[in-house]
Structures are given as structure tokens and as C-alpha cells.
Amino acid sequence: MPLPRVGAGLAASQLPCPLSSLPPAPPATTSLPSSHTQPLLSLLPQAMAATEFLIRVLLGTIWYPQKVGDELDEATRERMQQRAELLSLEMSRLLQELEQSSQEPHSQELSSVAWGALLFAALQQWQFWAIAGVLVLLSGLWWWLRKRSREQDGSSDEESSSNEESSSSDREQEEEEEQEEEQEEEESDGEGPDDERDLGRTFAKRIQWPVQNLAYWRRVVEELAGDLLHVFQGQWSTSFSPVLQPAIKVGSAFEGWSPHGDDAVYCLLVPLQAPRGHAFQLELSTVGEPPAKVSCIRVELVCTCMRAQLVENLLCFLHHSEEELRRNQDPSLLDTLCTGSYLDVQKTAHWFQQFVRSAWMLMPLSGRYNMKVLPSSRSCKLQLTNASRRTLFIEITLGVQQGDSDIFLSSQSTEDILTPSTTWLESYTVAEMKFFRHIARQVPRDSFHLKCLQLCARAMVGTGFSTYTLKTAVMHLLTTIPLSGWRRRDFLLRLQDIMRYLRCCLEEKRLDHFFFGNENMPQEIVLPPALQAAEPPNLFQHLAQDPAAHAEALHDFYELEDRLTRLLFYGN
Image (cartoon, rainbow, N blue to C red):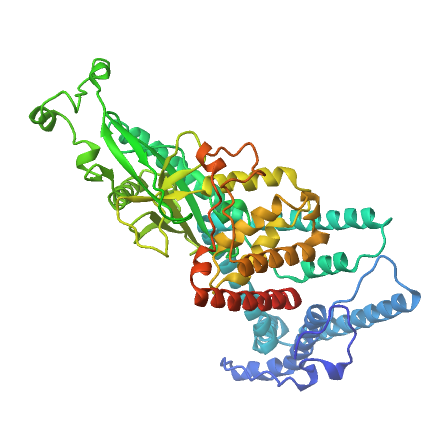
């Protein structure tokens, strides 16, 4: 039977174990002289009475503490006073009986024995041991919990800080959403009823958005990138390997719309520069369509005779003999990471993976995470696991910048085509990151454009559509629909616009690449002049050439619509 509520008054019949049903104490086994037996037996009733009285008081205090308030009514005060008087009379009677018995013959000899019997009888009562056992168990449990808490504090600092930051960010987000809703209501007070906007707010609240600790993990990735660059500058700056530049954060996790929650992959692009005595010449291909357009990086040797006078032990690869170079200087980049005259993607990626392994033990993060380099032929994929078994996935790609623009030749791989190891893919990830950063500065505070992108990408998982297709469509809409129309109240309208735009592109079998010939491009995004004036490539060109692929794409679109509808109505 569970313990009664504190302060509740129960009848005697409702006690967990009525005192009247308690078994009498078993007879003592201690042997006493026969002359002492009768006086001792005459004292046992008084001892039992005193024991029962003490137990009643103790159990009454533990099980039924009186509810105390600042003020008592007269009836309660009178009952408490009567009970106190009865307890006082009972105690006085028992003390008088003990005093009278102590004046009988042999009382002086047996007083200590009587009190010992009284104590022994009390110890025979099971309530005493039950209460003592419960107290011991509670003390042990409290000690164990405190010890375990101290042990976990050292190993879970990162997770607790992540949870605290996540909880704090969640609370801040909830407060911001409440303020935004109040602001929306105030702004719409003077407007007429708008059912679609009301539905937009309703659906936005119903959806179970995945919990994301993007801000915390982004800081971990940034720390990793900074430490790698620091180790490289300290140990590899004098070698003839490619020179690492500060990493650039790219991809959906850094743009703020990853559909995978905490399982997102955090992407970094590490620009490469040619080492001393070398130069990179980009040979841009006119074959292929973005994002699968491939190019090559040709490595050339340059004269360092003038520089050799300023740098000790630096020999010129062009004007010193091969024997002298082989004896006094490390091999050139052409002899290590190139195939022929071209920088090899796979060799370069393998070199970078080896560098990360050797640099890891010199980095502060190695004390907090276990690092594993996952298999990859064109990039460096890392898996970091902390003491709480939380896993972080990072993919580092290498790239060479096209002049001063935001376009790179990257080592990233593509699932659609197999590329030779000397070909590098044209990457627009840096330009995309700068575009979303530009939009974030222009949109209203309660803009839902990233939520729209996130929800559609979540529904696309498992279909034939790529997130790059969706991203391109949303970027086009962000430059054609006023940014003030992407607020929470417009959530449903913008989702309808995205789906209409995709369906229109599928029907026409055409989706223009965003960064080619786009007159709406923000000025802060730097593009090569040839890119700005070029005819936009068609990302749906394969649909125009293959009727079966087009029919399958339409089927996937209908499936996407169904998934999105289920997400809107059921929230997950």
C-alpha cells in the first residue's frame, strides 16, 4: 500500500499495518537466576506497554505528520490540545508504574536488568528494524547517486553544455516565435480575414521540426578547421606540398536548413595554393553541365633563383641539376601528387587524410573526441565521437579558386558520373553560402524560407530528386518573390509556390542553373565574367533527352506532393 498523502487524516482501520495486529515480542533467550525470574516477568508488561507507546508515537510522527499552517481554526486547536493531554497522562501513568515497581524488594538489583529487558523488547519489534533499514537504504542510495553524479560530470561536460545551449536556444526560439506571432497578430488587426495565412500559421505550428544542435556542432567544426591550419603552418610550411588556406564553411548544415537534424554532415572547403617553385594553371572544360562539369589543374614549375638568395637552402627546380635537387631538396609536387603534369585528386585526398591523422594528436580536440577517417577517394570524411557516444560527421573537400571569384575547382565527388583522378569538379558551394548569408541579412526576422527548404528536402529523401535541384528552385524564388512574403504567416503560400515552380520546370523539362546569366545576382557574389554572360545550363536536360526518365520524375513529383501533404497534416 502506498504511503498516504502528507497531512491526510486516516482511520485506524486504514493503517498500513494496524498496531493491534502486531505479534508479541518473542521471549528473551538470556538465562537469569531463578530468584530473579519472577520480578523480571512482572516488569515485562510495563516494558511492553512502554514499547507500544513509543512505537505509536514514532509511527504517528512518520506516517501521519500533522499539517501545520500559519493559522489554525478552533476545532483543530482543541483536538490537538486534547491529544497532547492524553499522551501526557499516558506517559505519567507508565512512569508511575515503573517507579512503584522499582521500590519493591530486589528492585535495586533488577533495575538495570529491567531497563535492559525493556530495551531488548523494543529491539524485538519489527517496526524498529524496518524503519532503520529504510533509513540505511535511503542513505546508501543518496551516497550512490551523488557519487555517480560526480563521475558523470567530468565525462559529460560537452554534452551538458550542448544540451544547455540547445535548451537555451530552444527557449529563445520559442520566445521569438511568440513575439513574432504577437507582432503578426498586431499587424493583421486592421486587415481582413485571410484563411490561407491562418492555415499557414496553423501548419507551421503542427510540424515537428527536427531538433538540431547546429550552432554547437558548428563551433566544434570551426575549432577543428582552425587547429588543422595551425598544425600545417607549424610543420608543413617549408615543404613542397599544396599550401592549405583557411577553410570555408559550406553546405546545408552551415546554411541552417539541414533536413537530417543531428545526423547532418558538416562540410568544409579547404582552398589549396601552389607551393614554392610551382604554379597552378586551370584548364576549364567546356564539356558537361553543372554540377558535373569537370576541369583539370595543370602544375607548372617556376623559377626561384631570385628567391633562393633570400631563402636558405632553396634550390630552383628549373636551373639546378637533378642530382643536386635529389641530394639536397625534397621532391617537387610533380613527383608526389601529380599524374603526368596534372594534380591528381585521389593522391591529394590521400595526402590530406595522412596529414589529418598525424596532426590529430597535436590538437586539443583529441582529448575530447575519438577520431576516425572514413574511406573516401576524393575527400576527407571524419567521424568524431565523444565520451557520451555522440557522433559528428565532417567532410573536407579540397579546391582551387578560379581567379578572385567564388567559384572553385573541387575534389568533391558526384554519384552520376565516374571521373578520372586528374579531373576536378566545378563547385558553386561558396557562392551558394554567400547567397544565403546575403538573404539572411535582408529577410524579416520571422522569415520561414529556410523552414520551407528544410521541409521540402525532408520530404524529398528517397525520391529521384536531389537537394541541389530543390535548392536551385528556392534560390530562384527568393530573387523573384519579395522577401517580405517569406514570413511565417506566408508559410503555406510559399510551399505552394515551390511545388508549382518544380512542376512547371518538370513539364517544360527545363531548370536553369542559378549562377549563369542571372541578372538578379547579389553584387557581393563574385563570378567570373564568362559565367555572368553565359547561357544558363539546363539542369533538366537529361529529362528532355530521355522520356522514361521524364515519366519517372513526374511520378516522383506526385510522391513528393503526397509526402509533403502528410507532413503538413500529421506533422511527421
